[in-house]
Length: 299
Image (cartoon, rainbow, N blue to C red; front, top):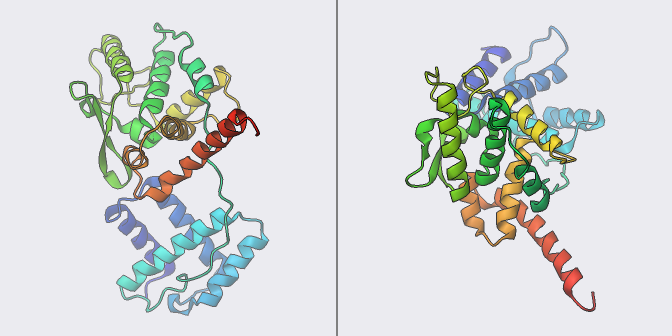
């Protein structure tokens, strides 16, 4: 029988090639599965994969909760283990999934953080240093995030060919390489046209066809985008969370507050179902309550 390490590596390859999981997901799944077997098996011991029972999994969950691991993380680890055993069942390595049907710890629903329209407008309307490419690029990245609601991994992969100025749309490669089209506002169309013109003047013979470059003319990394966004928002006076995902939350919240259709927002964000999008309606409802309380004469 194949050992646990070999089975795990085969599963990770399957997730990469068949499910097209992201590098972040692959790392998390590999770590979660390793954590499980490290927990139930002392150093040097050998375990038969078919000896893993639901009771063993429940003990593992209890141990995690006792050690203060958050319910959200526990649930992620359970999902990773369940996916692993589903794969093993398809391979006929095991006959049952011991992680299936287990009651998961309840997680508190957290409303997504977002930046107010006034605060973000102040950041975006502040003066831009067109003579410093990195600062100018970071400004354009902020505008692009806010205009499209795309993920940081999607923005990092954008190429010139993905931007259609004639049809005013951007082609995005999302999770599992699923493509979607995001419409461009006239404002972001003008900003991107000017950015590309300036960038081509600075880098006449680029090594890459990607939309956003480092100061050396190479494709920008996700880490650089993250740090640039955080720096720009902090400099603009944004407190609390200040990262690209907050801009995604902000985009969704603002357009829903201004009357956008929920299904349309779902398609733009690239959500698989409405459940993921509906969380933004909570912020909309909170605004509605505020307006109601402020406007009603007997509030």
